[in-house]
Image (cartoon, rainbow, N blue to C red):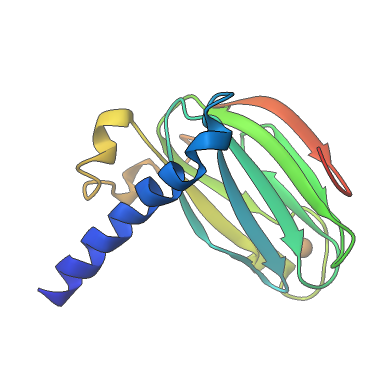
Length: 158
Ligand SMILES: [Cu+2]
């Protein structure tokens, strides 16, 4: 029961955030900005949900050394500058639902190979009934499901 209430609140959060930004976002396409933090040896958050066809901006920053951010099969591979040196930014649109692994693409130490996470792309209708995503597409489904709008590894203001 309590869990159900919490889930409902979480589902409301994105809507609230969006409406809060409405005046600024109204001018262009309402692009969602997702912030990811890289730190030995993990990304946070490790799981990100997107909707098919949604243009998103991903900004990755490091909390320690330089890292990489690569979406396997997605045509995105960024260098994430070390802490305090800015962030890596990419804008893209997932074209196909499925699970896409992202990982560190820059050797950063002993746990480098464990630095990964997943982008879960839902088809628009699935977004509402979001419970049915299972792991069955995990294997090699993820080839070129993204159209990359822009990629830049930046210091500031991309
Ligand atoms: Cu690494």
